[in-house]
Length: 464
Image (cartoon, helix red, strand yellow):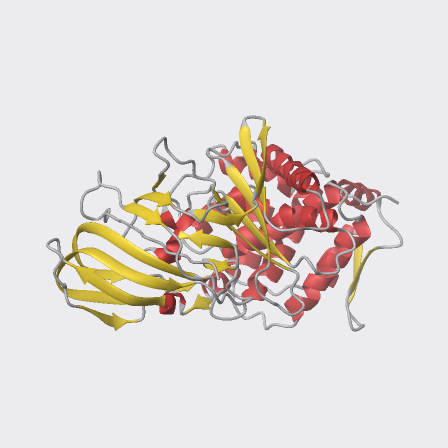
């Protein structure tokens, strides 16, 4: 059994902005974090209890205690799950966090520690009251730590956004670092795989370069890809992933039967790496998941086609499958409303309809410009000042999409008012035929094409 103890010495940002919480992480019990924090006097602490549809996160916090500056018991009590209150001002707190039992649903969204490897996400380890921190990690002999955040000369990590801070800890972590036109990309790999570390790094670099070209925006901080074995049995699930801040976390089942592991990595990266830019580098407000998930799925599919990870038939087959999934849910909300309900039901609807709307938008602007302008060309405008920091996400993105009368009408119909999709009718104008009469839909190029349809489809990747 590996012993683990996590000590966290913290100063609350709400007290004095120039004081950072001081955090030390040690290890003393298998799958459990012991947290000790020091702050300016406080009487209440709140822990994150829900994230990305995962509920009850704060239930892992146990044995919470609080002490005054003089070391007396501050008489703390638990008022609700993840909520603690003390009768006296408390300068020090301590508690345990259970990290040993991740589930398939939460494994990529919350901290976990299984065996000799784990991910520490400060967002669910620290009280939400602490918004800055100085973190020191003390690990067992032979353990390593990797993060997108660089430690200072004293070995401590200065944290300004705990909700984006991720640490990959464990034995035998292997790192590859690449400078891509001035942007740094690290690939960190733990565990044994059917692919070479260099192949995984090359796959990530290839996609990263593509999105650097797509956006024209160099990410301001180092980006990190972290690959680890899935620490929990997840049925038919082969992988889980999340992109948080500057970090892409990818957890995969090493025993999964995947004919082409490197190709699978590339396909996964086309989606997750784009999140480093959208939405993580867009400083927009509110729920606009229909765009940064749905449109990202479509851009990822286009990227996979352009990088020859898939062919044009697979491109169309994927869209047909997504349409079948879309049809399985009632379309009775606008995409804006559906984004607000994403984690309370119908999450796949936002992905499915958002992706299909992105496809139709791409077809529309290709037709308007004779194939000279695509949805990919529009992404540079997101980072050249057309979308201002702090704007409401829905308003900003809809305005960005609507650069012509036709695109303005399109956004109003399919995003703001929730018009249902009738792909067969719409796609016929572009030389595509959708047959939804069987068990699964079939999307194919029409047998006869007008010259303008052929030109548009060739710009999309079709080769007759």
